[in-house]
Amino acid sequence: MSFLALTDPEIHTVLARELKREENTLELIASENFASLSVMEMAGGVMTNKYAEGYPGRRYYGGCDYVDEAENLARERLKLLFGVDYCNVQPHSGSQANMAVFMTFLEPGDTVLGLDLAHGGHLTHGSSVNFSGQLYNFISYHVSKSTGRVNFDDVQDLAQKHRPKLIVCGGSAYPRFIEFEQFREIADSVNSYLLADIAHPSGLIAAGLHPSPIPYCDIVTSTTHKTLRGPRGGIIMVGKDKENPWGRKAQKSGRIKMISELIDSTVMPGIQGGPLMHIIGAKAVAFGEALRPEFKTYSQNIINNAKAMVDEFLTLGYNLISGGTDTHLLLIDLTSKNIDGKTAENVLGKAGITVNKNMIPFDQRSPFITSGIRLGTPAVTTRGMGKDEMRMIVSWIDTALNNSDDDNILSRLKKDVNNLCSSFPVYGH
Ligand code: DSN
Image 1 (cartoon, rainbow, N blue to C red):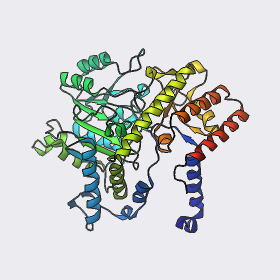
Image 2 (cartoon, rainbow, N blue to C red):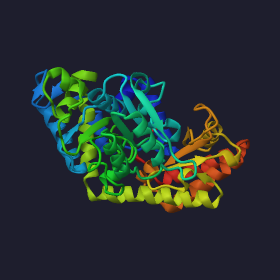
Image 3 (cartoon, protein in one colour):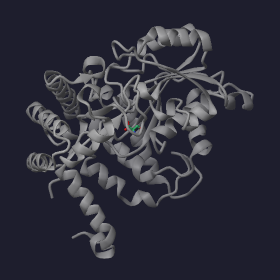
Image 4 (cartoon, rainbow, N blue to C red):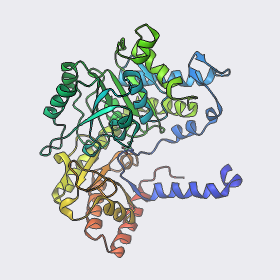
C-alpha cells in the first residue's frame, strides 16, 4: 500500500507515470542509470530530516551521531573504491564539486584550460553561459577533426601560450579513455594543477576497466549517479594529499594548508550549507555495491554492450565520433543521415527510445538543434540486456531515423520496445 497514494493522489499519479515510463522505454541517455532499491530506500529515508552542517565529529548541530556514521561509511568506502587518501562526499552535484575545486585553486580571472563543450566537455569546463566561464578565464582545447580524440598538440600549445593555473580533463561526451598521463606531462611542463572530472566513467574506473586518474591528477571530481549507479550527487577526491601553495584561502590564513583542508572548507561553509544526509547515506550504499565483484561484471557488460552498438552502427553506415568507444557512450554524427539531433531525439522518443541531442565536434548547428545524438549503455545494462538486445535496439533506431515521418512505423517500433522492456523489468513490482 502506498502511503503517498492515500495522502497525495495527485503527485502519486505523476510518480506512478514516471515509473511506468522508466519501465516501458529504453533509456539510452549516457548519464542516466537505475539506482538500486537499497540506494532509493536510503535516499528516501529519515536522514532527510537531519541538519548536519560541518563534518563528522565537528558539526554545528546536535543529534548527529548516526549521520556521522553514515558519512564516515561513505567516506571510507569511497576511499577504498578509488584508492585515495581523502574524499569529500558532500557536494550536491558534479557542478558543485567542480565549483569547490575552482574556488580552492583559483582566484577570479585566473586562466584554466578545459575541453570545449561542443567537443565533449561540460558546462562547468568554461562555457560562457556557466559560472565557470564567467568567473574564470577559461581557454578551450579541442579534439582533432580526423581522430575525434583530444588534440594534444593543441593542448600543449595553449598551455605554453596561456600558462594556466589549472587544466581540466574529462567531459560529458568523450567516448574514449581520458588520457590522464598525457595531460599530466603537459600540466607539469607549465607548472599547472590538473583536475580530472570523471563524472561519466567513474564506475568504469572504480571497476578497473578505465585507466585511473589517481596517480596523475591533483584532484578528481565526479557525480555518483551515472556509471557509478548511486543517488544523484557529487564527490571530490585527492589521491595523495599535499600542500596547496596557491590557494586563496591558504594565502589569507597566512599558513599553507593541505588541499583536503581547503576543499572541506570550500564545500562547507564556502558554497554549501547543510549536507543532504539521506543522499550521503545513499552514496554509502552505492559505494558498498560498487565494491562488490558483481559491479565489475556489470561494468564490463556496459562496455561490451556499447561496443556491440558501435559494431552495428558502423555496419549500417553511421559516422561515430572517434570511430567507436572505449567506454559506455557513443557520439553519433547524423550529418550523412540527413536528420538533425533535435529531430532524431523527438523521433526516437515516439518509438520509446530516450536519447539526447548532442553537439558534435566542429558542429555547424546550434546547441538547440545539433548534428548529433549521444547514446549510453549503463541503464539498459542494469536491466540485464546484452549484446543481442543492443543489436536489435540499433536496428530499431535505424528504422526510426529512416522513417521519421511515418507514425505507423514509429508506433509499431514502440510496441516492440515495450515488449522488450517487459522482458527486462527495472524494479518489477
Ligand atoms: N548533464 C550531464 C550529462 O548528461 O552528461 C552532465 O552534467
